Image 1 (cartoon, rainbow, N blue to C red):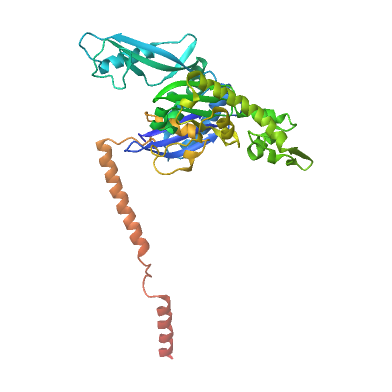
Image 2: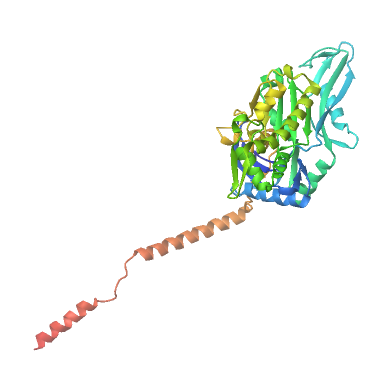
Length: 438
């Protein structure tokens, strides 16, 4: 139980937990994957109710432990993607002595300085890999290169300070589980889904969730921008409710018949909600299209702030449960004028084929598992090893018990003997004697 990673993704509509075993070759084997519905304890990717979050996460951990054959989960990685997350630029630099070169210690020094930086009223949750510049020129491998000024440019992922505090209060304090690490889910998704070539050519990973939509933009292998839009597919469901439907009916219609684009061929077609009522398909899709366009417009604006969309050679990669909405890829393609594809976890890091690698429900948890480095599972509790004297006593007792057992088995196998002659022989002698006397 020394190479098991446990991760929980705190999503708005699904709280997903996973246990993965790290193999000798560095790949992972998925041991267990379970899910809980957070209901009202999560809002737009953030913890809203501490007690309810701890209760549901606790049930999730219990489900995962049932697959571990007595193993105990004592720590977990937590993935977050709340609406306040975004990246900011941070630069650290130092002068290099005449004739000297950049060393690993120089890189370590700048990294430590960056980690000590505390944004006002915010919390730095993660740091993207640095981009290095030597005398104003970019250098991918700075170690060993002479220069006068060495500069490291970082992208800090920041968010409200309450994010870390609420995770500690609910998971660590109320659940009594150690936090192995807090990870930014959009960045973990990008590392698990985007190839090195896609990041180099330029692409945007758009994760359409229930409560929020995150946008991560890469170019020349570097993270240019990451932010979270406080709009998600739950808003589409609530808009459909305006057609005099319950939330459950609205969610079902969205999944079964909804489309992000109103189509002429659907004109006049209707859907039976129940025995007494029907809804025009185009009336349903008109509501969906209005909100979907708003979300796509926001995605377009976030990407355009940092780069031209036509410069993204690999286009836009879609993730999240909302991408299963019919017509959404087409709507994004028409607005952004780039190629669009659905995402999946790369099979290389995960041993064997697994249907969950392409399932939007499990992708965030799997991506978090792949970034885990610290073992999270303790082995089953074993009885203490006896002292040498106790071992000898135990051995003698075992021998005695074994000898007694052999005797008992021997008695059971030996047929029961009758003392003296059998009854039938005695009776026969008596009759014979009586006849002789006569």
